[in-house]
Length: 186
Image 1 (cartoon, rainbow, N blue to C red):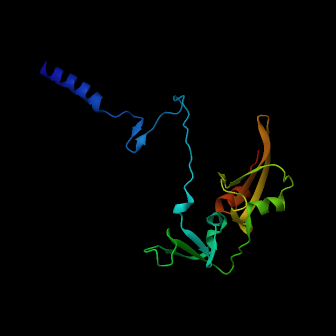
Image 2 (image 1 turned 120 degrees about the vertical axis):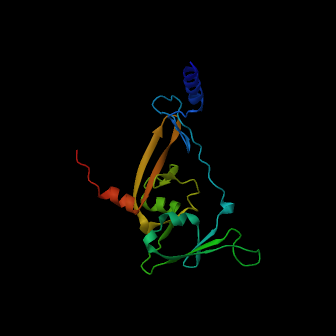
Image 3 (image 1 turned 90 degrees about the horizontal axis):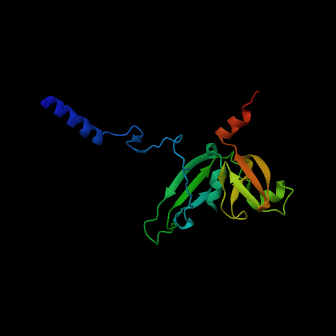
């Protein structure tokens, strides 16, 4: 009888301290097939005030240009941190990129790119770069035109919204080049 009560108590206590199979040590995992509530994530941009200054071959450039620079063309990177207000370094530091001699820097703004390649100029545009929405002004956002692989232009006509154009830019990254080389047979 003593063993019976001991086993019974251990079962109840063990059940209360046991982990559920869907919980993991790094977080909670919910079975999405049974969960009826979709996961909603709001993405906020970080402010520009905490970002370092960017220099390419000792020329100050907008940070947006880094997204369209071939990483294989970077010769060296040098980071300077500000230690005092009088040291001549920008408050949040500086990042200096030295490029290889073969680097072709054809800098163009999204506005100039749109005017150069797109026929429909009277409609508003939304730009994406490798699947990420560009939230900055198209006149200030700079890209390296020689590192753009392709542009997909899609016109969106929805009754509740004025028509607009989605311009999808793809860089010459290894992943995008591999996708372009892939042939799908049906």
